[in-house]
Length: 255
Ligand code: BGC
Image 1: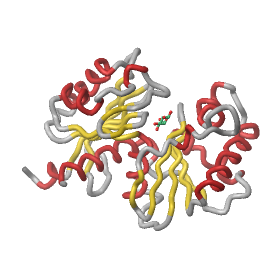
Image 2 (image 1 turned 135 degrees about the vertical axis):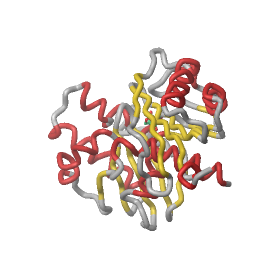
Image 3 (image 1 turned 60 degrees about the vertical axis):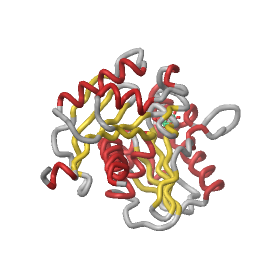
């Protein structure tokens, strides 16, 4: 095998609306081909999603390892929750299902954890010590906790009971803003209150905001008040999931 093939892993990012993939050079974080996106089938059952993963593998004529994200708790290859996806994923042996569907070695991890890995390896958390939280604001709220460069998986800070009688992702995800057609003036105090809550609980050294909303970081980052930590936008934007998934698969395939 050439050096390039050894260092290349297919990253796939499974989301509620789209499933995206690209081969990644895991040494540089660069995509080795243009990203390919397929609409998430509805209902997004394990079988239907497996077919799309196989389509992506075929699209790239891929024969090597695959890293794949999922928007739920992923523990030992099993999906243990399904907040914004089909309920049939709860307790499903998802890693095995998807590996079988594409006939290749496949590693599954939580989508926000993948974003965290990508940021700590190539982005805003690179080379930083201390406690770093990556929050992805999208349909739900995902989280990754990184302590001295090491990822602590499945933190699910979007499911903290906040502000009361509800969970944070139903209060200040990007979807909540969009569905209610909220202006930044109305949304920002919600996000600010949530970040202050995270500060109270974790005293982070840095918080990185990812997800689609991070493209508009100038609309909310300068408006946040009362935070003792630096708040920055994610650097990998749309590609964080794909890159993080590839990194995880590369690490596990080498170990
Ligand atoms: C899920 C998380 C996921 C986040 C972002 C939440 O509803 O529980 O596992 O990371 O959405 O997709």
